[in-house]
Length: 346
Image (cartoon, helix red, strand yellow):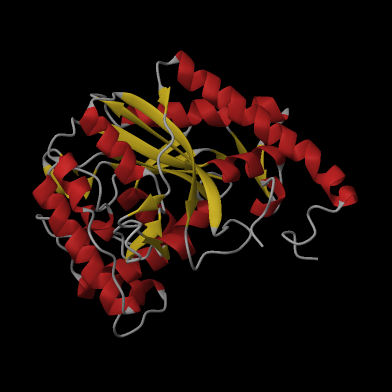
């Protein structure tokens, strides 16, 4: 039976309820931790001018009809990021949100079209602080679930162990035997032919029209990600600048950016940044992402001009988004994301 069907059946609900109560305890514990560290909880609107401007993110489109009867296109946000950064521009310094977000073309054991994202920002602090935050939340989740280990299927991870921290380049070399940096020029632009030669050498398939990003993503998903977060948490750090549209570049090395992801049991849990605050550079990156989206999918999303204006006033900050449902999954050992959602998407 589909886990998202008949979840309201009293017998099925009785089976599901213990895990759902653990979800509540984990959320309450994280909220308490954030409040104790001086964070203000905010509640961003879900309707947005743009759902996000990353090439491979897909939003849900809708429209708002005004009192004049005329429709105005809007989208359900894929992240509360734009709204929360506007709050930073307005003067907030430590904020978090448990936000429902929507992503189209995503459904599976680890994906739901609607899910809960925990997002938080720290003004004036380095992005390494966010790594410490995530570890604290994973440990809180394990304690609230009464679980010594995080678990997904046959994979386990000890959240209390010292985490592994690897750059993306180090992970490509270690797990795929690929020299990623050889295909990235000093200015951060990429060389698809060089990376294609690396894929050919290790016997990984590629198409004639694959971009550098296509090939890098394939190595990451097929060779690297399944080996991350096994036994202990992995922090995958210093993404290529070409794969970090919202992050600032690492000082002194334009090839890589202040972006990291956190993995446990081979599952991506969080995506953090030293935030880009150069509005002109952000516009250029968004335009490049939307050009790629149009090339691949035949559609693109508008830019949120209000966000780009606010970015000019936004202070230096670090920000991160964590898939809250996935954290609950791993803490409870649930096999599917719907198992930890009070009312799964039909």
